[in-house]
Length: 325
Image (cartoon, rainbow, N blue to C red; front, side):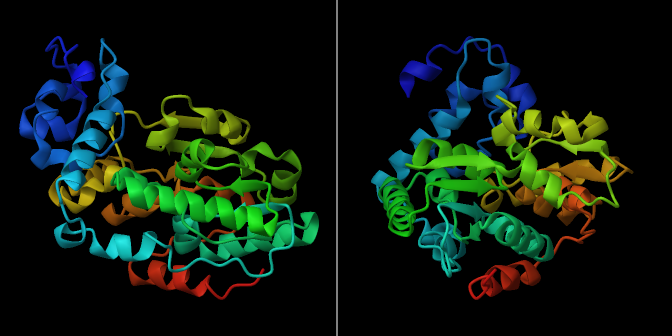
């Protein structure tokens, strides 16, 4: 870790761009020596994007987290019990009736927030392309907490399960799943937007309009913008929201930084127009500020589904345990 932060030139750019660093009046070099703030970082990557010497605050945070866990820090007793109960061995997983080498993997949050749209996509993929649907968690929340042993267990479980079922490729909806799986799965992954035939079968012929209005990019796609390039063809006239750092979900930091997370979410209220996203997690966090937000897939497919919130999103996740598309 030291080899990274020792390059710091104290320019202050990271502090100016990051609400977390600004709150505690520190830069990345300071942060590297503050293990008590290990889990307060959003892992959004804004600091690295502006750092003239390429220091990555995400890695500093992950190193601090690893060190705390190695020294006996108990995540269950420090606010992460519910998250770990659900995600450690995803309690809502469903691998029923899988009979294809390609599987649709909607992820945790899209199916929780947009259950009707999930069913529309799942049914269409099954009927038109013979593609089965599986429900599970990619494991990124565990990896973000930097629980090294548990991370490897989740990776092994998923890889073994896909191998046993003969699944060789996954079609994804979630940007977090996409970037995480690319480095942690033994099989090929792709986003649904990459498949022209699938998108043509899904997009409503009665609602062919392209996306117009403010667009908020998810943190994992802000560097390479790989997914953004996939959806550009569906965008007509959008204003990219750049001044808001993060939706507030990144790095599981909202558990420690409730007030700061709310402040981030409230910034979206400045937009009178509907905000579009292509990350269901972003949609769930932004809607907490009572801001009008819509996932671009709901718009393109024409489901007009209102996002589920609160206990309803948990119920939706649970119900997909029994879903058979």
